[in-house]
Every structure is written in structure tokens, then in C-alpha cells.
Image (cartoon, rainbow, N blue to C red; front, side, top):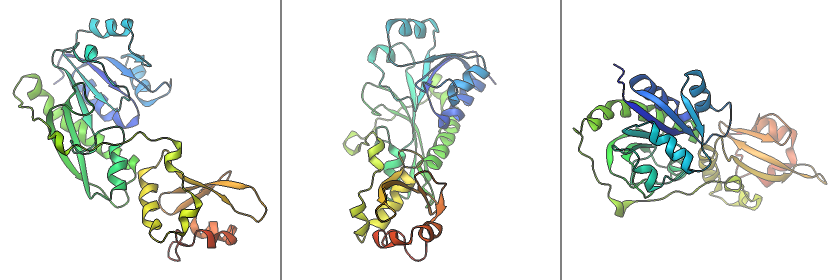
Length: 288
């Protein structure tokens, strides 16, 4: 049954929509703050469709802080937001800000936990619900749940599944938390590991690495971890005397040449047979 308890949500991207839907269904979701910066972004569109007040946040000024205060929410929920919240913002909410993080904290704190898990070859990960404090992904744990990482998982499919799982776990956890029936658990900070912010160059592959014997496994993990962004890509000269082209490596054995549609490795080699010697360790006979 829906409760008339006001709640504020901080978040962006399609992955968090299950969380927004849970909050809208069970509470008075009165304000959404997003960093999408896109009038057609998924969270922005949800807010408009459901007549929920929305603010596109680039920084927290005094006017924005006053707006949050005026909503008189006891608690807020944050997922995939992208900005660090100050102590002043954290202290606005008597029950704090609850964060859904897609890893088994304290492992993989920071912005890219799903990508890090895939790159490391982990067999499982999970979702953790914490109460935010002033340090990154450092706060006490409300709930945690594991999930298997499939061999075909990309960052996209993994985050999609983890945030759906997180939304269900949030719905189960919030009633006990709000009624002070839940005992929070401190993280083991000595076991904390951290992830880095990605940029476009994170997915760039030096063509010289195609001759390294163990590189095929590495690039397969990168393709899954960096899909859909920043992607795995390189510059290759596909024709003798021609200009180097951007070549993208995609999941499911696909490859895309700049200006062309994605194609199979077999079709790629049929079109550019002279390139095979340059990437023979990457494209094996069974994939070609």
C-alpha cells in the first residue's frame, strides 16, 4: 500500500528506472534530481510523464538546497547519480540518503563496479544498499544480495539486472529501516577496493598488442566490460596506402569499421583479407 511519506530521488540513466518506479509506487516521490542533462533522458521522461518535480543538477547552490529542504522529506534514495553530496546535503534528511550500489561492498567502490568485476573475471557480484556518509561508498550496509555474472554479460546487461535486483531489495528493506527495526552493518574498510572513472581512451587498443599471445582473452573481457561505452576500438589501416580507420570490437563476435554497419568477423575478413595477419591472434579460425 502506498504511503504518504515524501521521498527525494537522486539519479540518472535507464538502469535506475526500476528504483524510481518502486519509490513512485510505494511513497510520495515528490522531487527527482538528475544529472542526465537531456530533456529526453529516461529519468527526466519518467518525471515528466508522472508529473513529478524534476531538477537537472550541475552543482548544488543555495537555491537548490532550499528547494530540497522545502520538500521536508525524512529520507532520500540515490543511484547512479554521478556527483558527490556534501555533508550539508546529507544532513538535510533525518533518516539519511540511501544508496543502491551495484557491487558487494566493500569490493569495487567507485563509479565502475560492474566493469571492474567483468574485467577481473569474477564469477559473481551483487547489489548493496547503504546509508551514505561523506566518503565514497563507505557507509553502513542495510542489505546485500549476490548474483551470478554470466559469461555473456556486458556492463549494460549486468547493470540492468543489478538495479532491478536492487529495486526489489530496496522495497523489502525500506519499511524496516524507516521504522528503526533494521540493524545496520559497518563495512570492513580494510577490504575495500576502488574503481576508476572511464573515458573514451579507456577502450583504445594499441594495434601492437594484437600480437601478444594472451591478448585475445583480455580483449574479450574488455569488449563485454566496456559495452556500450566507451567501447573497445582501435585505428587500423585496412587497405594498402589507405587512411587508418576507427574499428570497433562489439559483443557477440561483431566488428564495426568506421562508416559501416556492424558485421561478423568472417564478413570483415572477406572484405579486408590483408588485415588478418595483423590481428590473427584476436580473430581465431573458429570466430572467423
